[in-house]
Length: 258
Figure (spheres, rainbow, N blue to C red):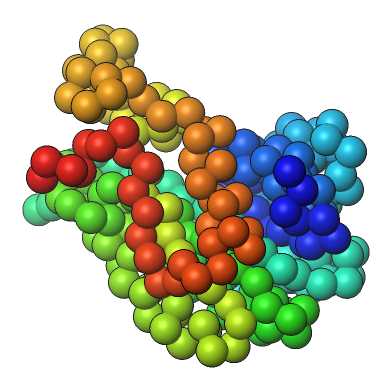
């Protein structure tokens, strides 16, 4: 299946688990991949994930909270490949595990900056390039935390609820211009983020925290990054041509009973 032959897909947060899987998935379907993460991040694995599938890949270091640097990764994609067709707006951080009243202000601001401002800037700068290429798709990473509350993660939850709303508004605005905007809403996925949260929940026994979280899920396991990447690729493809401004849980059924 080669749904992205000749198309250019930008993936932010490309050094992380879901971003890395998305780079591989897009490349496996013949997309040209632009892997974006912080300048300090190691993007070699993302580039390899693409080139091992025979696709071309470009690594770009950028802070998604900086308008100039976001504009820079879009310009780099166009300079290298001549167009932009897809943005997987995936960069995000979990922040600190703390009650709402005790949440550190500097960390609150950082979570909102990365998880919300970064997504907004991605849409702001990438949409015109996608329109110029004849249309395409933007897929944002929200979360089940963008659909419900969660104790101890108020900044993350607030940011992901905002991404859900932004997805709907941007989808309404951009659809007439040929750009569909949707969001994936993962439950716990096998990534660094979950390792960090497990350690914060149970510093003395992170494995027990992981077991407790998994047992609460209907499928009693975490999702795999590749499972999220498969949904992202579908939403970015022409197979989803009539899907817009929608939020897609990928959570093993965890939000169904809430």
